[in-house]
Length: 249
Length: 314
Ligand SMILES: Cc1cc2nc3c(=O)[nH]c(=O)nc-3n(C[C@H](O)[C@H](O)[C@H](O)COP(=O)(O)OP(=O)(O)OC[C@H]3O[C@@H](n4cnc5c(N)ncnc54)[C@H](O)[C@@H]3O)c2cc1C
Ligand SMILES: Cc1cc2nc3c(=O)[nH]c(=O)nc-3n(C[C@H](O)[C@H](O)[C@H](O)COP(=O)(O)OP(=O)(O)OC[C@H]3O[C@@H](n4cnc5c(N)ncnc54)[C@H](O)[C@@H]3O)c2cc1C
Image (cartoon, rainbow over all chains, first blue to last red; front, side, top):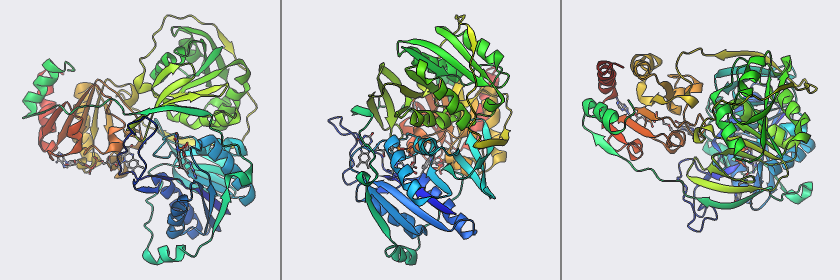
C-alpha cells in the first residue's frame, strides 16, 4: 500500500505574526517557515506504517510556491521516499488544494492519505474532509490512533466529549491530531540522503484545476488587544478583587 | 432565501452550541430552519422547535445518524441543499468533521469559525491562532459556514415551529461506528461553562489535577480545562484541551494555573471576560493577558484559594 501525505509550508509555530499596516494580510517577509506541525505527525505516522511492513512507499506532496520544495525535503529527510511539488502562486483555498490533491491521488492511487487536521496559519480545518468528499472516500478526522485491519482502517478520534473509534473501508482519508505520535527529528545523514531523493515538479495547470478563489479577503486586521492587569500580593487580595472589583464570585 | 442550521444535540436535548449558532444564522437575515439528525431524536427536535425565531424543524431520525459519521450526515445535508442558500453549524468536533465534506460536495468554499456576520455574504474569522482577523466575502451562491460559538450570545426560547420528518439519504456505507469513550461528568461543559479552571504542565500528574484543580473547580461550579502540555503528558483527557487546536472558550472567569501562556493556549481563552493566572514565574507570558496575576507556588496558593472560597460560602 502506498501512503500519500500532503504537507504544507506555514509560518513556524513559534512566530507571532504581525498584521500588515495596510490591512492586506500578515507580514510574511523574512519570517521563519516550517512544515505544518500536524503534517509532521502525518509523515511520522506514514513512516511507522512503512517500518511496520504495512506500507510500501511514502510520498509527500505540497502545493505552493517553489519554496514549498523545502517542506518536501523536510519530509524526505524524515524518511519519505519521494516528493511531488505542485507549483501554485498566491492564495490557494482548501477547496482548490483538495481538487489538486484529488488529481494527484488519481495518478498515484494510494491506499491511504494522511493529512494534518488543520494548518496553523489559516486554521481552516477543511482540506482532508473536502478531499474525502471529492474522492468519495471515507474520512476519520482528528486521529489519535490508527490501526490497519486487512483493507480496513480502525481509527480512534479526539472528539468534544472524549474519544470515538470508527472503521473505514479503504482507500481512506485520515487527519492527524496532536496525540497520534511524536514526530522524529531528521538526522544529519538522512538530511544528506534526502537531497538525492526525487521530487516531481508539477504545476497546477497540469491538472486543469480552476484556482480562482471563492472567498475574497477584504481585509486583515489586528485583533482587539488585551492589556495585562495587576499583580495581587496574596490569595486574600485575589479573592477580594474577584469579589468586589471583578464581580465574578 | 432560507438558512439551514444544523443542530448539535444529544437526541434528548439541544446543546448550547446550537443556541449560539442560531444567533449567527439569524444574523444572515433569512428564515431559519433547523435540522436535527440523530436516532430517537424527537425530544431534541421538539426542543429545537421552541428556539426563538426558528420557522421549521426537520427531523431526520435514522440509525445512520446515531454516531455522527461524516459520510451519511454529509449526504443527508446535501440531499436537502436545493431548498437552502446557507448552511450554518456550530464549530464543534462533529461539524468540523462534517461541514467541509458538505462544502466540497456542493463545490463551495466553507467559511470556517466565523466570529461575526458583517453582512449576509461577509464574515470575520480569526487566522494565525487569533493573531489576525480576516474579513472575507463569499462569492458562492450557497454558503457553508461554521460558527465559533464562544463569540455569539445564545438565542433563547419562545418559538413554536412545526417539526417535519426529513427523508434519510442513501448511506454511502463507507464507515462504521466501533465504540466511544465519553467521560461522564457533572461539571459544566467547557464550551458553555461560566467559569473555567485550567491546569498546565506544572500539575505534574493526573493525581495532582484531582487533588488541586478539581476541588477548586467544584467550589466555583466551574468546568475544568488543561494546556496541551498537560494533555500530552496524560495529566488530563484530550477533551479538556483549551487552545488554537483544542477548545475555544470565553467564560466570565478563566483561572490559569501553572500555564505559561503560549500563543496557542492564549488563542483558546483570551476572550474570557476576567482572566486570573497563578504562576511562580513572574515573567510568564500569561501575566500579559491576566487581569489578576498571582506570583506564587500553585501547590500552596491553590489549596489556600479553595479554602478562602469555602469561607465565602462557595
Ligand atoms: C504564497 C501563498 C499566499 C497565500 N495568501 C493567502 C491570502 O492572501 N489569504 C488567505 O486566506 N490565504 C492565503 N494563503 C493560504 C492558502 O489560502 C491556504 O493554503 C489554503 O487556504 C489552505 O487552508 P488551510 O491551510 O488552513 O487548510 P487546512 O484545511 O487547515 O489544512 C489541513 C491540511 O491539509 C493539507 N494541506 C493544506 N494546504 C496544503 C498545501 N498547500 N499543500 C499540501 N497540503 C496541504 C495539509 O496536510 C494540512 O495539514 C496563501 C498561501 C500561499 C502559499
Ligand atoms: C501545532 C501546535 C498546536 C498547539 N495547540 C495548543 C493548544 O491548543 N493548547 C495549548 O495549551 N497548547 C498548544 N500547543 C502547545 C503550546 O505551544 C505550549 O507548549 C503549551 O501550551 C505549554 O503548556 P503549559 O503552559 O502547561 O506548559 P509550560 O509552558 O511548560 O508552562 C508551565 C508553567 O508552569 C509554571 N510553574 C511550574 N511549576 C509551578 C508551580 N509549582 N507553581 C506555579 N507555577 C508553576 C512555570 O513557571 C510555567 O510558566 C500547541 C503547539 C503546537 C506546536
